[in-house]
Amino acid sequence: MECSDSNTNTTITSSTPFSRSPSSSPSPPPPPTPQPQVIISPCAACKILRRRCADKCVLAPYFTPTEPAKFTIAHRVFGASNIIKFLQVY
Image (cartoon, rainbow, N blue to C red; front, side):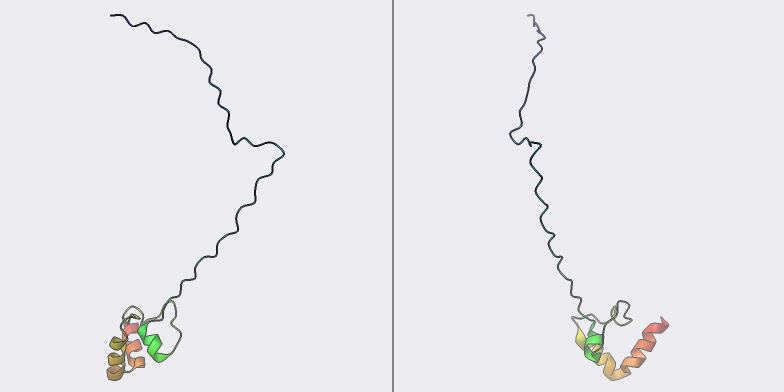
């Protein structure tokens, strides 16, 4: 059984249906969408003490916003200033 392979030169031309003409101008980009603002809740200690919770709040890692009772109990026993002093030492 013999297979003969004939080499033929074929030229394929493709036409693009969305070709741009030189006179058409590109459409302007859509306006940027506003980024949603992330609202960070203050830690439980700052909520209870009614003060602004800074980015580097000493109390934030220990008193999460979801557990305000933790700080309330510690505040009654030690006081806010003593808790801050304890945490600043370490």
